[in-house]
Length: 205
Image 1 (tube, rainbow, N blue to C red):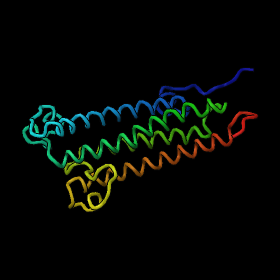
Image 2 (cartoon, one colour):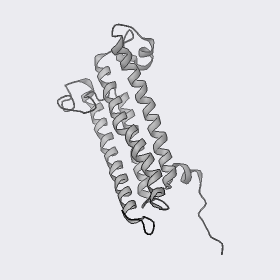
Image 3 (cartoon, rainbow, N blue to C red):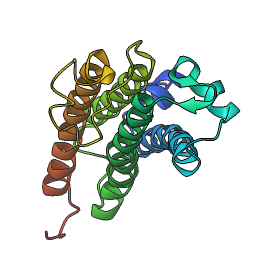
Image 4 (cartoon, rainbow, N blue to C red):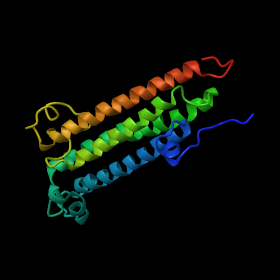
């Protein structure tokens, strides 16, 4: 008896995929891209930190109005440190350790065909992608991106008048983090349900 399968298109296979292996690759690629952005930021503020009185053309090229004669403004220095730390701690580590390896390895380790919910798995990635996009958009806010340090302690994070990045930039940072938390929660629940319910026959906890 012939089996009938829905024919996969490019969109369903590579973009809105529900396959755990493809989703792990999506997390990996997005995490690597965010990592490159974070490394570029760290190069900029470390150049400024190492040679504070030296003018760098690369600073002019990347920062435009946020610099004076190739020397970084103090506010944008703090903003770069903030966004760099946020990306490295939340987006790179989470995408690498949870999104990539958990999605790839959990079904293989417990003998499952896939995650418990492929749809929720897909939603988890796309919320992660949306969160990453909002974080990058915050870099282009006129007043400047969030500048409260990646721990985002008050008063710098709470008072718009405290520092230029405490206005819209800080709001976008918080929106990005809220979406990121939703993504992580959905992913974590999916991992737990998969391990509890889809272990191969005879496998104990």
